Length: 403
Image (cartoon, rainbow, N blue to C red; front, side, top):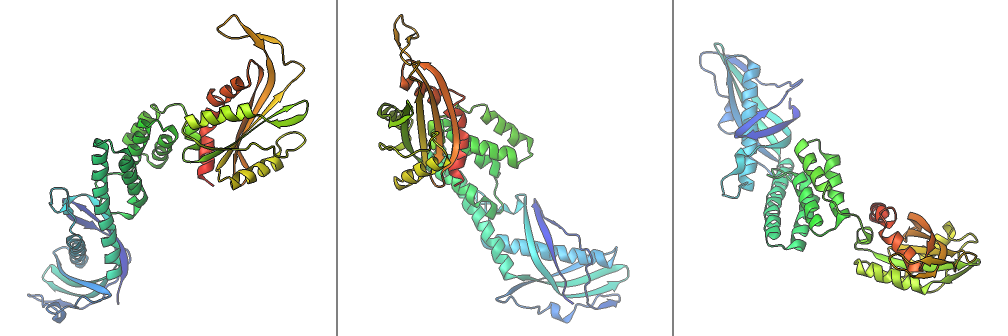
Protein backbone atom coordinates (compact mmCIF):
# COMPACT_ATOMS: atom_id res chain seq x y z
CA UNK A 1 0.00 0.00 0.00
CA UNK A 2 1.32 3.49 -0.85
CA UNK A 3 0.97 6.25 1.74
CA UNK A 4 0.93 9.92 0.79
CA UNK A 5 1.58 12.82 3.08
CA UNK A 6 3.07 16.31 3.25
CA UNK A 7 6.04 17.41 5.27
CA UNK A 8 8.17 20.51 5.86
CA UNK A 9 11.93 20.81 5.44
CA UNK A 10 14.00 23.21 7.50
CA UNK A 11 17.68 23.71 6.75
CA UNK A 12 19.85 25.23 9.53
CA UNK A 13 23.55 24.55 9.18
CA UNK A 14 22.97 21.04 7.82
CA UNK A 15 19.51 19.93 6.76
CA UNK A 16 17.34 19.01 9.74
CA UNK A 17 13.98 17.54 8.90
CA UNK A 18 11.03 16.78 11.11
CA UNK A 19 7.60 15.44 10.25
CA UNK A 20 4.73 14.12 12.35
CA UNK A 21 3.54 10.92 10.68
CA UNK A 22 0.03 10.72 12.01
CA UNK A 23 -1.80 7.56 11.00
CA UNK A 24 1.08 6.37 8.77
CA UNK A 25 0.60 2.74 7.69
CA UNK A 26 3.45 1.18 5.74
CA UNK A 27 3.61 -2.32 4.36
CA UNK A 28 6.61 -4.57 3.82
CA UNK A 29 8.24 -7.72 5.11
CA UNK A 30 10.05 -8.29 8.39
CA UNK A 31 12.80 -10.77 9.22
CA UNK A 32 14.55 -11.52 12.51
CA UNK A 33 18.05 -12.86 12.43
CA UNK A 34 21.66 -12.20 13.29
CA UNK A 35 22.35 -10.50 9.95
CA UNK A 36 19.58 -8.41 8.28
CA UNK A 37 18.95 -9.54 4.73
CA UNK A 38 18.98 -6.74 2.18
CA UNK A 39 15.86 -6.85 -0.05
CA UNK A 40 16.31 -7.77 -3.69
CA UNK A 41 15.17 -4.41 -5.04
CA UNK A 42 17.82 -2.48 -3.06
CA UNK A 43 20.64 -3.17 -5.54
CA UNK A 44 18.51 -2.20 -8.54
CA UNK A 45 15.81 0.25 -7.41
CA UNK A 46 13.29 2.04 -9.64
CA UNK A 47 14.90 4.41 -12.13
CA UNK A 48 13.96 8.08 -12.42
CA UNK A 49 11.29 8.63 -15.04
CA UNK A 50 9.40 11.49 -16.70
CA UNK A 51 6.80 11.58 -13.91
CA UNK A 52 8.75 10.70 -10.74
CA UNK A 53 12.14 10.80 -9.06
CA UNK A 54 13.21 7.95 -6.77
CA UNK A 55 15.39 8.06 -3.65
CA UNK A 56 16.38 5.14 -1.40
CA UNK A 57 17.57 5.11 2.18
CA UNK A 58 18.39 2.69 4.97
CA UNK A 59 17.40 3.54 8.52
CA UNK A 60 18.44 1.83 11.74
CA UNK A 61 17.37 2.10 15.36
CA UNK A 62 18.01 0.21 18.57
CA UNK A 63 14.85 1.67 20.09
CA UNK A 64 12.00 0.69 17.78
CA UNK A 65 10.86 -0.13 14.30
CA UNK A 66 9.24 3.30 14.06
CA UNK A 67 12.57 4.91 14.92
CA UNK A 68 14.25 3.07 12.04
CA UNK A 69 11.46 4.19 9.69
CA UNK A 70 11.86 7.79 10.77
CA UNK A 71 15.61 7.68 10.19
CA UNK A 72 15.14 6.26 6.68
CA UNK A 73 12.48 8.84 5.92
CA UNK A 74 14.66 11.72 7.09
CA UNK A 75 17.47 10.50 4.88
CA UNK A 76 15.16 10.47 1.84
CA UNK A 77 13.95 13.96 2.66
CA UNK A 78 17.55 15.19 2.88
CA UNK A 79 18.40 13.57 -0.45
CA UNK A 80 15.50 15.30 -2.17
CA UNK A 81 16.57 18.66 -0.72
CA UNK A 82 20.19 18.17 -1.78
CA UNK A 83 19.09 17.10 -5.24
CA UNK A 84 16.94 20.18 -5.73
CA UNK A 85 19.51 22.59 -4.29
CA UNK A 86 22.42 21.12 -6.26
CA UNK A 87 20.40 21.25 -9.48
CA UNK A 88 19.49 24.90 -8.95
CA UNK A 89 23.00 25.69 -7.72
CA UNK A 90 21.89 27.90 -4.85
CA UNK A 91 24.92 30.02 -3.91
CA UNK A 92 25.55 33.15 -1.94
CA UNK A 93 27.60 36.14 -3.13
CA UNK A 94 30.92 34.41 -2.40
CA UNK A 95 29.95 31.37 -4.46
CA UNK A 96 29.68 29.08 -1.45
CA UNK A 97 26.63 26.79 -1.58
CA UNK A 98 23.81 28.26 0.48
CA UNK A 99 22.65 24.91 1.82
CA UNK A 100 23.38 26.20 5.33
CA UNK A 101 21.17 29.28 5.04
CA UNK A 102 18.11 28.94 7.24
CA UNK A 103 14.99 28.50 5.17
CA UNK A 104 11.68 26.67 5.05
CA UNK A 105 10.79 24.61 2.02
CA UNK A 106 7.62 22.58 1.69
CA UNK A 107 8.09 19.26 -0.06
CA UNK A 108 4.68 17.90 -0.96
CA UNK A 109 3.49 14.56 -2.35
CA UNK A 110 6.36 12.33 -1.22
CA UNK A 111 5.30 8.68 -1.35
CA UNK A 112 6.82 5.58 0.21
CA UNK A 113 6.99 3.42 -2.88
CA UNK A 114 8.68 0.37 -1.33
CA UNK A 115 9.71 -0.61 2.18
CA UNK A 116 11.22 -3.66 3.87
CA UNK A 117 12.27 -4.19 7.47
CA UNK A 118 14.40 -6.60 9.48
CA UNK A 119 15.37 -7.10 13.10
CA UNK A 120 18.69 -8.33 14.45
CA UNK A 121 18.48 -8.74 18.19
CA UNK A 122 17.31 -5.39 19.49
CA UNK A 123 18.30 -3.47 16.36
CA UNK A 124 15.79 -2.65 13.63
CA UNK A 125 16.67 -1.92 10.02
CA UNK A 126 14.35 -0.38 7.42
CA UNK A 127 15.03 -0.14 3.67
CA UNK A 128 12.87 2.54 2.07
CA UNK A 129 12.29 3.72 -1.50
CA UNK A 130 10.63 7.11 -1.82
CA UNK A 131 8.93 8.49 -4.90
CA UNK A 132 8.72 12.25 -5.55
CA UNK A 133 6.75 13.87 -8.43
CA UNK A 134 8.77 15.79 -10.96
CA UNK A 135 5.98 18.40 -11.00
CA UNK A 136 6.72 19.20 -7.35
CA UNK A 137 10.45 19.21 -8.02
CA UNK A 138 9.89 21.70 -10.85
CA UNK A 139 7.64 23.85 -8.62
CA UNK A 140 10.28 24.21 -5.93
CA UNK A 141 13.08 24.61 -8.45
CA UNK A 142 11.22 27.50 -10.10
CA UNK A 143 10.66 29.20 -6.74
CA UNK A 144 14.32 28.81 -5.83
CA UNK A 145 15.35 30.29 -9.17
CA UNK A 146 13.01 33.25 -8.56
CA UNK A 147 14.70 33.68 -5.18
CA UNK A 148 18.10 33.79 -6.87
CA UNK A 149 16.83 36.41 -9.32
CA UNK A 150 15.41 38.55 -6.52
CA UNK A 151 18.70 38.34 -4.64
CA UNK A 152 20.37 39.81 -7.70
CA UNK A 153 17.70 42.52 -8.02
CA UNK A 154 18.11 43.42 -4.34
CA UNK A 155 21.85 43.93 -4.80
CA UNK A 156 21.23 45.94 -8.00
CA UNK A 157 18.72 48.15 -6.17
CA UNK A 158 21.25 48.87 -3.42
CA UNK A 159 23.85 49.68 -6.04
CA UNK A 160 21.41 52.00 -7.84
CA UNK A 161 20.70 53.75 -4.53
CA UNK A 162 24.41 54.35 -3.99
CA UNK A 163 24.66 55.84 -7.47
CA UNK A 164 21.55 58.02 -6.93
CA UNK A 165 19.76 56.30 -9.82
CA UNK A 166 16.29 56.82 -8.35
CA UNK A 167 14.17 55.53 -11.23
CA UNK A 168 16.24 52.35 -11.55
CA UNK A 169 16.10 51.71 -7.81
CA UNK A 170 12.34 52.21 -7.70
CA UNK A 171 11.73 49.83 -10.60
CA UNK A 172 13.91 47.11 -9.07
CA UNK A 173 12.28 47.38 -5.64
CA UNK A 174 8.75 47.32 -7.04
CA UNK A 175 9.67 44.24 -9.08
CA UNK A 176 10.89 42.48 -5.93
CA UNK A 177 7.66 43.25 -4.06
CA UNK A 178 5.60 41.89 -6.95
CA UNK A 179 7.47 38.55 -7.10
CA UNK A 180 8.51 38.05 -3.47
CA UNK A 181 5.73 35.61 -2.52
CA UNK A 182 6.69 33.35 -5.42
CA UNK A 183 10.32 33.04 -4.29
CA UNK A 184 12.15 30.76 -1.84
CA UNK A 185 15.32 31.27 0.19
CA UNK A 186 15.77 35.05 0.01
CA UNK A 187 18.23 36.52 2.50
CA UNK A 188 16.16 39.68 3.03
CA UNK A 189 12.66 40.30 4.37
CA UNK A 190 9.82 41.76 2.33
CA UNK A 191 9.45 44.48 4.98
CA UNK A 192 12.98 45.63 4.18
CA UNK A 193 12.01 46.18 0.55
CA UNK A 194 8.79 48.04 1.41
CA UNK A 195 10.51 50.38 3.86
CA UNK A 196 13.31 50.94 1.36
CA UNK A 197 10.64 52.14 -1.06
CA UNK A 198 9.14 54.36 1.66
CA UNK A 199 12.54 55.93 2.29
CA UNK A 200 13.07 56.45 -1.43
CA UNK A 201 9.74 58.29 -1.76
CA UNK A 202 10.47 60.38 1.33
CA UNK A 203 13.66 61.62 -0.33
CA UNK A 204 11.53 62.72 -3.30
CA UNK A 205 8.98 64.40 -1.02
CA UNK A 206 6.30 62.01 -2.28
CA UNK A 207 4.49 61.71 1.01
CA UNK A 208 1.52 59.57 0.00
CA UNK A 209 3.68 57.04 -1.82
CA UNK A 210 5.88 56.74 1.26
CA UNK A 211 2.82 56.48 3.51
CA UNK A 212 1.43 53.61 1.40
CA UNK A 213 4.40 51.33 2.19
CA UNK A 214 4.73 52.45 5.80
CA UNK A 215 1.09 51.61 6.48
CA UNK A 216 1.47 48.31 4.61
CA UNK A 217 4.31 47.22 6.90
CA UNK A 218 2.48 48.32 10.05
CA UNK A 219 -0.54 46.27 9.02
CA UNK A 220 1.26 43.15 7.80
CA UNK A 221 3.84 42.42 10.51
CA UNK A 222 3.93 41.96 14.27
CA UNK A 223 7.72 42.13 14.36
CA UNK A 224 8.71 44.91 16.75
CA UNK A 225 11.82 45.95 14.83
CA UNK A 226 9.98 46.40 11.53
CA UNK A 227 7.08 48.22 13.20
CA UNK A 228 9.52 50.48 15.01
CA UNK A 229 11.28 51.29 11.75
CA UNK A 230 7.93 52.00 10.09
CA UNK A 231 6.95 54.36 12.93
CA UNK A 232 10.27 56.14 12.58
CA UNK A 233 9.67 56.76 8.88
CA UNK A 234 6.06 57.81 9.56
CA UNK A 235 7.44 60.60 11.74
CA UNK A 236 9.31 61.94 8.72
CA UNK A 237 6.26 62.19 6.46
CA UNK A 238 5.79 65.69 5.00
CA UNK A 239 2.48 67.49 4.72
CA UNK A 240 0.42 66.08 1.87
CA UNK A 241 -0.08 68.18 -1.24
CA UNK A 242 -1.95 68.41 -4.54
CA UNK A 243 0.88 66.51 -6.16
CA UNK A 244 0.26 63.63 -3.76
CA UNK A 245 -3.46 63.65 -4.49
CA UNK A 246 -3.15 63.63 -8.29
CA UNK A 247 0.29 62.08 -8.85
CA UNK A 248 0.47 60.42 -12.24
CA UNK A 249 -3.09 61.51 -13.06
CA UNK A 250 -4.70 64.18 -15.20
CA UNK A 251 -6.91 66.61 -13.28
CA UNK A 252 -9.77 68.36 -15.02
CA UNK A 253 -10.54 71.94 -13.97
CA UNK A 254 -14.03 73.40 -13.93
CA UNK A 255 -14.58 76.75 -12.16
CA UNK A 256 -17.79 78.73 -12.21
CA UNK A 257 -19.41 81.54 -10.28
CA UNK A 258 -23.03 81.96 -9.22
CA UNK A 259 -24.28 85.47 -8.55
CA UNK A 260 -27.92 86.53 -8.30
CA UNK A 261 -28.86 82.93 -9.15
CA UNK A 262 -27.01 82.96 -12.47
CA UNK A 263 -24.09 80.68 -13.36
CA UNK A 264 -21.05 81.69 -15.43
CA UNK A 265 -17.57 80.34 -16.12
CA UNK A 266 -14.95 82.08 -13.95
CA UNK A 267 -11.89 82.49 -16.15
CA UNK A 268 -9.80 84.07 -13.40
CA UNK A 269 -10.27 81.14 -11.06
CA UNK A 270 -9.72 78.69 -13.92
CA UNK A 271 -6.42 80.32 -14.90
CA UNK A 272 -5.15 80.59 -11.32
CA UNK A 273 -6.09 77.01 -10.46
CA UNK A 274 -4.43 75.74 -13.62
CA UNK A 275 -1.21 77.60 -12.80
CA UNK A 276 -1.17 76.25 -9.25
CA UNK A 277 -1.73 72.64 -10.32
CA UNK A 278 0.86 72.76 -13.09
CA UNK A 279 3.36 74.28 -10.66
CA UNK A 280 2.68 71.35 -8.32
CA UNK A 281 3.51 68.92 -11.14
CA UNK A 282 -0.07 67.90 -11.97
CA UNK A 283 -1.25 67.42 -15.55
CA UNK A 284 -4.38 69.46 -16.25
CA UNK A 285 -7.17 69.98 -18.73
CA UNK A 286 -9.70 72.80 -18.34
CA UNK A 287 -13.30 73.28 -19.43
CA UNK A 288 -14.34 76.75 -20.57
CA UNK A 289 -17.97 76.05 -21.45
CA UNK A 290 -20.77 76.03 -18.92
CA UNK A 291 -22.30 72.65 -18.09
CA UNK A 292 -25.94 72.43 -17.09
CA UNK A 293 -26.37 72.08 -13.32
CA UNK A 294 -29.26 71.40 -10.99
CA UNK A 295 -31.40 74.17 -9.59
CA UNK A 296 -29.53 74.05 -6.28
CA UNK A 297 -26.10 73.87 -7.84
CA UNK A 298 -24.00 70.74 -8.22
CA UNK A 299 -26.26 67.78 -7.54
CA UNK A 300 -25.40 64.12 -8.33
CA UNK A 301 -26.73 64.38 -11.85
CA UNK A 302 -24.58 67.45 -12.53
CA UNK A 303 -21.50 65.66 -11.15
CA UNK A 304 -22.02 62.76 -13.54
CA UNK A 305 -22.47 65.13 -16.49
CA UNK A 306 -19.22 66.88 -15.58
CA UNK A 307 -17.45 63.52 -15.22
CA UNK A 308 -18.70 62.43 -18.64
CA UNK A 309 -17.35 65.58 -20.28
CA UNK A 310 -13.96 65.19 -18.62
CA UNK A 311 -13.81 61.53 -19.56
CA UNK A 312 -13.89 62.60 -23.19
CA UNK A 313 -10.94 64.88 -22.36
CA UNK A 314 -8.94 61.89 -20.98
CA UNK A 315 -8.96 63.25 -17.42
CA UNK A 316 -8.85 60.94 -14.40
CA UNK A 317 -10.36 63.35 -11.87
CA UNK A 318 -12.22 66.63 -11.93
CA UNK A 319 -11.62 69.49 -9.50
CA UNK A 320 -14.86 71.47 -9.55
CA UNK A 321 -15.17 74.87 -7.90
CA UNK A 322 -18.33 76.88 -7.35
CA UNK A 323 -18.07 80.46 -6.07
CA UNK A 324 -21.37 81.72 -4.61
CA UNK A 325 -21.26 85.50 -4.26
CA UNK A 326 -23.56 87.42 -1.90
CA UNK A 327 -24.07 90.57 -3.93
CA UNK A 328 -25.83 92.36 -1.07
CA UNK A 329 -22.67 92.46 1.06
CA UNK A 330 -19.95 92.48 -1.56
CA UNK A 331 -18.34 95.88 -1.97
CA UNK A 332 -17.74 96.75 1.68
CA UNK A 333 -14.29 98.12 2.42
CA UNK A 334 -11.95 95.75 4.28
CA UNK A 335 -8.37 96.20 5.37
CA UNK A 336 -5.66 94.41 3.41
CA UNK A 337 -3.48 92.47 5.92
CA UNK A 338 0.01 93.95 6.35
CA UNK A 339 -0.87 97.26 4.80
CA UNK A 340 -2.87 100.41 5.62
CA UNK A 341 -4.92 100.02 2.45
CA UNK A 342 -8.48 98.83 2.05
CA UNK A 343 -10.23 97.04 -0.77
CA UNK A 344 -13.73 96.13 -1.84
CA UNK A 345 -14.71 93.01 0.08
CA UNK A 346 -15.92 89.86 -1.60
CA UNK A 347 -18.56 88.14 0.52
CA UNK A 348 -18.78 84.65 -0.87
CA UNK A 349 -18.75 80.91 -0.29
CA UNK A 350 -16.31 78.79 -2.28
CA UNK A 351 -17.28 75.13 -2.52
CA UNK A 352 -15.11 72.48 -4.14
CA UNK A 353 -15.56 68.87 -5.20
CA UNK A 354 -13.12 66.24 -6.43
CA UNK A 355 -14.86 63.78 -8.75
CA UNK A 356 -13.60 60.44 -9.99
CA UNK A 357 -14.24 60.71 -13.71
CA UNK A 358 -14.67 56.98 -14.34
CA UNK A 359 -17.96 56.82 -12.42
CA UNK A 360 -18.79 60.34 -11.18
CA UNK A 361 -18.09 59.45 -7.54
CA UNK A 362 -17.26 62.43 -5.31
CA UNK A 363 -13.99 61.61 -3.52
CA UNK A 364 -13.78 64.82 -1.48
CA UNK A 365 -15.75 67.99 -0.93
CA UNK A 366 -15.66 71.01 1.38
CA UNK A 367 -16.10 74.77 1.40
CA UNK A 368 -14.83 78.02 2.85
CA UNK A 369 -16.74 81.27 3.23
CA UNK A 370 -16.46 84.80 4.49
CA UNK A 371 -15.04 88.15 3.44
CA UNK A 372 -12.07 88.22 1.11
CA UNK A 373 -10.34 90.88 -0.90
CA UNK A 374 -9.99 88.62 -3.96
CA UNK A 375 -11.42 85.46 -5.46
CA UNK A 376 -7.97 83.96 -5.74
CA UNK A 377 -7.48 84.51 -2.02
CA UNK A 378 -10.28 82.08 -1.28
CA UNK A 379 -8.74 79.67 -3.78
CA UNK A 380 -5.44 79.83 -1.92
CA UNK A 381 -7.24 78.79 1.28
CA UNK A 382 -8.61 75.55 -0.13
CA UNK A 383 -5.32 74.67 -1.85
CA UNK A 384 -3.01 75.19 1.12
CA UNK A 385 -4.93 75.11 4.41
CA UNK A 386 -4.31 71.86 6.25
CA UNK A 387 -8.02 71.14 6.75
CA UNK A 388 -8.88 71.51 3.07
CA UNK A 389 -7.41 69.79 -0.01
CA UNK A 390 -4.13 68.74 1.71
CA UNK A 391 -6.16 66.81 4.29
CA UNK A 392 -8.21 65.15 1.54
CA UNK A 393 -5.15 64.12 -0.47
CA UNK A 394 -4.96 60.52 0.92
CA UNK A 395 -8.66 59.88 0.23
CA UNK A 396 -8.36 61.31 -3.29
CA UNK A 397 -5.29 59.23 -4.09
CA UNK A 398 -6.83 56.06 -2.64
CA UNK A 399 -10.03 56.66 -4.58
CA UNK A 400 -8.20 57.14 -7.87
CA UNK A 401 -6.01 54.09 -7.25
CA UNK A 402 -9.01 51.85 -6.53
CA UNK A 403 -10.92 52.55 -9.74
